[in-house]
Image (cartoon, rainbow, N blue to C red; front, side, top):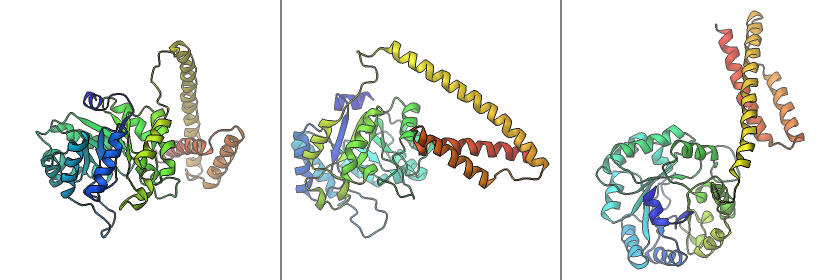
Length: 352
């Protein structure tokens, strides 16, 4: 954490630059404008892993020379994505200051192991994006592989998760995974990549503000001098001027501001703790009733899952949530989890 604090200073820590380094002129001009706005770390992809071949897949190693020009001219540190051991060796040889590992790579333990072994003895800062699927253990495993070869300057990037469902954003934010990784590894800095979550620049501010409200340490945001003409991810990039304006609107909150009364907060937390304890007790009682239901169903040769009953329960409680001004999706998720646990209890009774 100290390494990143020394680089960036006050939070939020900002890393910015184009999705892809396209030309030397585009790369340098974007960097100049970002540097004039106080950005200290410049990001640009030179190897671009694409879902299907035939699209622009990056300029390759020539981009490393452009990034060195950025560093010489602006003084900014440079960062790029690596996806295999060859990329790592080229990036280090090319003088890159920070590397990051993409979501597809994080999801592959074999690739992560190869990258980790290629980094042995070279303590370059490494940022690890979450895997494409919402699996916190897989994310932690990628971190641990890097730590096992002696790396200590490690950070995390939360960039959202793939979803088959049609959603507002390009990727499902999955904030609970971000909060869980922060809980499990509070020693590692956590950046949010709102560009890849959003998919459209219209949503960048609301996602960035959400990350600040959840105590993320910084943001990695894509910026391009002419976003609409970008060779990749055009819709999710901002001009440096628009980025400066957006960052100026962010409200950065403190964990424990000096003006806050912790006594008042602790009193409210005490009430929450009591309610949570009551919820646990009620769940225990509910599962006891589920055992009895399971015994009844076993005696009468009935299945554990009754679709019509479940449909009526869900409809009833989602309707009650709406009447009480509660989030309907949240209530549906809660009761779905309770129902799944209840069916599991009854299934065990049926097979006992």
